[in-house]
Image (tube, rainbow over all chains, first blue to last red; front, side, top):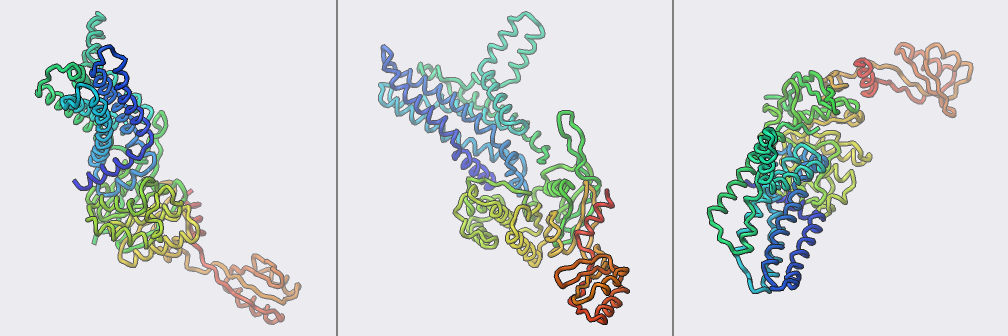
Length: 255
Length: 309
């Protein structure tokens, strides 16, 4: 446990000192803060705009951060040959990956927390006030980002940063359109196409399950069961991608 | 007692390029390193030294054969807590400071914080980096990185230290410091295994050497036994000899070299040495020195490499 924390902590230090991270975060924070002023343009000056825009920012910028820090980490360790000294210590490879992942989750948590705080700051000046119910949407977004980070880490185990970025981004986009993908296949009239899109729909993670942002914005009821199921769904996929990463990473030769 | 390192029939090939062309890095390598030895692993660049070491550390998986360190199979996670390793031209987390860096590596061995910090400070002193404890590694020079690399390999007080080209890129002072540390570790009873292509380093400190070329082991053994103990030639230096007398020595010497008043001649056969000395003295010349030459490691190395093709 102690070693795991040491690796996670070191990863956290590494990512937190990355300048790209700050650029993305500052941009996100400005945009979220800006939502407060955007509200003024609305006839009803509806605070929902603030929540809507903020949550979208957390999801999108969070995903960008996840991908950017996720894809580089293992690849960079190999490229910079820092991995030699780490893996020659009594650390198993699956353990190393897990430590890296946990470190990334820490970084991500800090980022999401900052964005959420700014959102609440903007909301405090509206009639909706500090509505803690919104945290449910933030929580599921975080689970979604956990999954995206793991997917990036997975690609980072066997391909270059550029390709890993493209693949991870594709997963993010496809994750939101898998429903449409299935419909598209069904409408195409081709048996082969419908089977193929059906398979993709079954296999690829459906990120819509983590999206309760609309419901939160409009104060619709959300059951605890729904949140728990979505979380379990996310953890299930994280476990799958972690296993796949271990399979690849454990056989890798560090030339 | 089991050997510190045992390698049996180790082979490794890599697939390179788009078509996966097979490149043989090491072929059927076998040798042993006894405990407590300072072992020099010699070979020209690309001979397979680093590949062998990486196989020992479990960083690459052999295509054939087996290796053991301290009696355990190479690649086993547990045994690594008793081994220290410095990779070739190491790169480290440059955002860490010297002390922070050693502390991090110490934590990977689950060494308690107090012990860790004390050990880290000791090691910084050992490698002469006390002044750089609070400096970020990105500001370290190459020699300093190599030295802190050596320090991280010793953080767990290992029984076996494996160093991949520890002297490469260092100035003479830096090389001497690393050499001193290696000898000190051996004197403390640890086994030190290091690879190099700098022969003088090996000649000065090693108990045993292994020589590899093109992925194959050429020879292994004690340095004194490997080198030809026979005297190969004598170099005799003298002065004040007239040119006619000097001309008379020609049949017995292979090389004549004039340096001001001093004449150096190379005498290949031992039986001619005394005759030449007495001839020079009789003709009124003064003998300055008679130096016997044995085969150096460099000559041996080149001879072995030529033989192996």
